[in-house]
Image 1 (cartoon, rainbow, N blue to C red):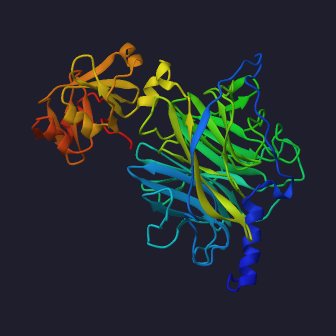
Image 2: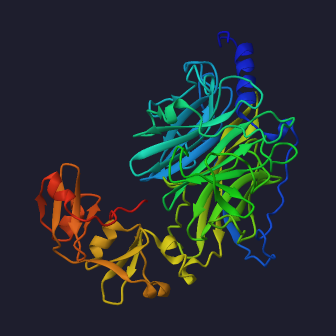
Image 3: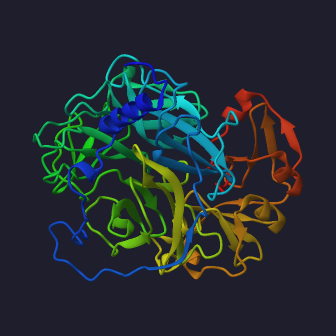
Length: 495
């Protein structure tokens, strides 16, 4: 490819990047996605209608590549420890080789401005490998973090070859320095079930980690169950982040085990460039996809067998698929003021097309009427991280699907997102997993601090201050002594 100096050449490279990594329907007819049927193979039943209020929008563009970046689109966002991190697709002349690049920036507010980790508008952190399936382009990121490892799922392309886009995965300890996984080979390629006019191939991944499974939703314009224009979203899951083993493919009858990542037997939404997250308060996956009027949120249960709620709309202009604000594993954030009845939905999407989609703007609203605390199956996910009075004049903290009874309110206030004034009655049916008494044993190594609760398990805490407030002297131990304890969940709440 020639030098990218000069506006004319920049425009050419922008078009090349768009062809390689965007399956946008502009070239093949915009899609208006119909509502999914309420179930697969089961007579349709009335579905609850969720409310939507507190609509919000940033005053302007929240992130851009800066410099000579001709486009900015396909964001993925992570809410983590009081900050927001966003990775997106752009193209910078300083990043080699010429082609689509992935940038990262951070902000303490969804209204921006997002700033690159090096102080620039956006820091390039992942580009074409120069060889292999992603030799020229890397685009459409979806980033999650499981334990201490970040996983980046992305579209890769070596050039502008028919149906040549594929999906790769990379790992990182910090979300900035990435190493290609799976030997640098793609984990999903075009199935070639059908050859259509849309020659995009496979890409635009959206990843979620749930109950030990990695879920991957993606576009494949050659999939058997894709629409006439290649639109459609297919789902895989595996306990392996590279999908090399244990793959289950969503099929008309549910998930079925296959030896690889083909075929494409069932699409769950007629769209391109979507995002996916798990909403514990609704016990449902939420798929964000663009339709007339804005971003539609469509819901499916955990097995993608039924659609338990009618879709909702986040209105406003758009030019390319949205990026949902999610927690590190791809789950919906909790409502800080009403976790029993509200789910905040925030997203960023490109709103203008120049050489390609650009102008990333934040939109959002609250879903209301979830009724999560009335349902024993949903009350624990909805209240995760919250504390409330217990029947024994202590405080109950909900964490990782369990209830921990804490003697001192001051300790609960240190650990919880918030201590509710009133107890949620549905929690009375949940057994207490462990109790934290004042003065409980506390130990530390060079790598962490923990408390030993009445179940004799070691529960890690965020810092020694929690032990001090609990009147627990902290004893230094060896790593061997630390490892000898059975472990409870970490007493560390995602905020």
